[in-house]
Length: 228
Image (cartoon, rainbow, N blue to C red; front, side):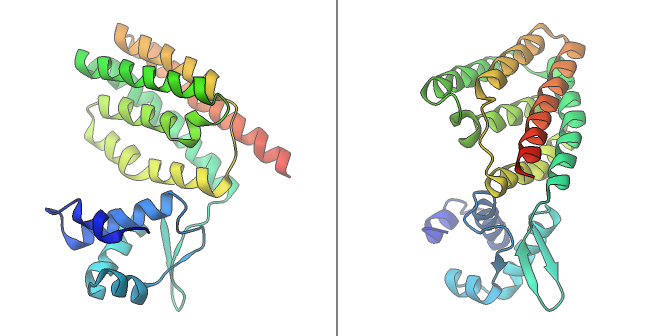
């Protein structure tokens, strides 16, 4: 966790538990603290000059997000995802993100859709630079999905996906380290999803998003099978 003081200073109006939670969350999902890695309360309290109370509150929030597990006499450790858990996440994503796309087609403003188009233009340049890896490894793909969920304007949906499930999605990408060649194809699928949202075609937006997430899951299943 490089430059912790600078990171903490970015959120001057937040509480100490908020800032420690954000710092640890980023270190976990970026793979800086590895799967199974121990979260040492004494060490973190010393590094950041804080008491154990706010630290334990932050760790409790990480546990609630599914990023950390706590065991008696062992302490807190970063979760280690199994292949089965990974596929379960994809099944949940297919259902929830399909509904998010349907709602986005009904609720996104013209400004939000224009911003989404601009994001895709940036992603197109990413694909040109590194078609096999850039889109997924630099979180471009996931950023697109964030925007769709935000565009649903459904606070419960946003909380379930953006504040919970997507942390695990980022985490698995580092833990499993599976390169994907789906970048160019996924990008085209994204363009079609935005087209449906812009037309206000809620049913098509949902169907295409579900098919998109399903194709990603099937790609992961093939890669997992090849590892066995």
